[in-house]
Image 1 (cartoon, helix red, strand yellow):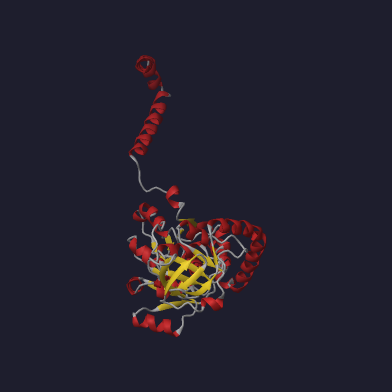
Image 2 (cartoon, rainbow, N blue to C red):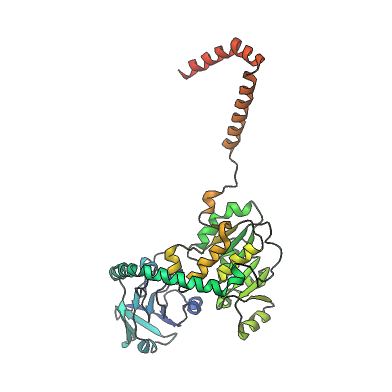
Length: 388
């Protein structure tokens, strides 16, 4: 989605919008409205978070940290620039602290104004500057891969009982065994992936596991959420209706008192899954431990660039996929591998092959050979005449 219209001040140049300020980007996202100026502190903005900013139709993004630090080619800034959203980063923290949530701002170049007062200034991130920074960041990939490998090993040591022996899993019912499981996670292409899965979903019973805000996407796609998996901060992103409608709710990690009270008021009893792996990976492990025939992952991808782009969750994503093994199928790939429709030409082809097989069997018998000697050659000559 490309934003083509911005609100401009009639008197002074720049983009005008309401400031929405929070150092925790995940907590800020639900509060954003069209045209707001998001003020964040997010080093190496990832693609998924950037797409959610685009979906919120923000007017601009001001970042205390760098969009691309140079550690690896973070892809979030490219998503925002492609959508036509102005970006400013490297804003000093002391100056960013002067920006009040709800204040009306004017962003011009790399400067943040309130009316005519200059509150903060940083570096405007253009497409040209982004290309240069991404090129430089690619040189850091070998060291980042080494760090990813080390962190993955450490996570495996901490979670050996879960990932290797599948101990400590919550009990969420018997709907897993013998069924395919669809794990839906928040992602920039999750709605499109779910549309592509419709033919497959119509043909068989599928257990649907939604992670956090993806419960809304699954519901919009017409799917009942059998298990809802929540991580820290997800409760703010999921509606009360979706929480109550879920067959079971699992909280990854220990919830705080405020979260427990919120769930209790809603009449929702959540099982606690005490693990340090991510919510998506926890859902994958639960599905395999429950003897799912196949696990389809929607909204969550794990190529090398994405693993490095996941803000510290790369080791969890890598181990989760290794734990699932050959039962894991990506939702973008599944429609190309499976078709639930038997087309008419398939039936005609099977019928023709069957008739040819019967004819061949008859012709090798004495009766068949006699018939061919008397009539077959005449029939063959007639068909040749038709083709001429």
